[in-house]
Length: 288
Ligand code: NAP
Image (tube, rainbow, N blue to C red; front, side, top):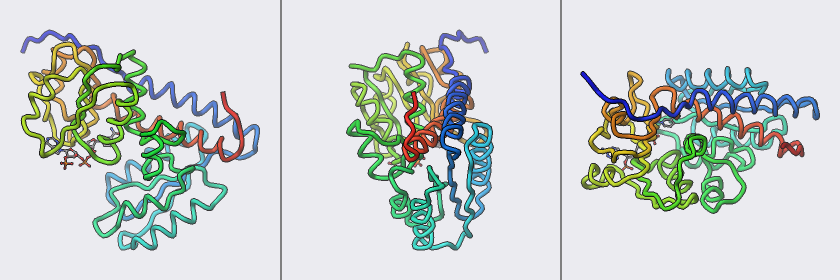
């Protein structure tokens, strides 16, 4: 197949590496000045293989960045009340600076109630209602990590957002909704699409910036992309496939994130940066 590549790739791997190096330097500074290393507690309910892999990966990255991690593995039959007790205990533990509840937790858990048991100052994954509200109002707080990573990528590639039409496909609490709020804060005109949206293609075709956050392989096709648009593919489906048909979108977009190597690495980089920031706040350290 002959094709003309026009899009520049947005290299999340390299940007994430630079961010993690910065977090490592900041973590070392905190450890040197206080004798305490930043510590992230990770809570996992059950043994879902994908979740186990994610948690291990996050622990490994923490270790590389000089961030301590504490792993709390709970049995699959843990109740919402028991999970809330664990999260409340970590929220009160001065040795823990950040808390991550790996989700999904299982259908019997009230995930919203569990997230709300995380103290906002330790909510480094940006999942509580307070974090969402603070982010939406532009007040201090932690961002949902994937949206935060997407915004860092857009900034790194000097993508102008003011007055541009940004179409977000997906409206989950951890991804679609918050990324729309962050784009709005940068003065983009934001349209949300979801499973009930009629004629998705024609809406996406208008977009200057497309954020695909659906979990449906290649839902967005190249012909849906306006020539010169910026395409952020947050989707991660089996077989390393995104929500955008990469090969065809490549010929129309100006900038595009690859899958893998685009949004994915940025998520963890934001998680580490926010853990270090939480530790600095809690230990009363000013960082540059
Ligand atoms: P989710 O909670 O399942 O939400 C999916 C969203 O897509 C929902 O809002 C849903 O609409 C919408 N949707 C489903 N089918 C659609 C369709 N045919 N047309 C338009 N919208 C449709 O998923 P999520 O947690 O946000 O994750 C989305 C994707 O991002 C997944 O592939 C996930 O693996 C990936 N992800 C990647 C990272 C990373 O670090 N790279 C992090 C988080 C998630 P309704 O609201 O109407 O149901």
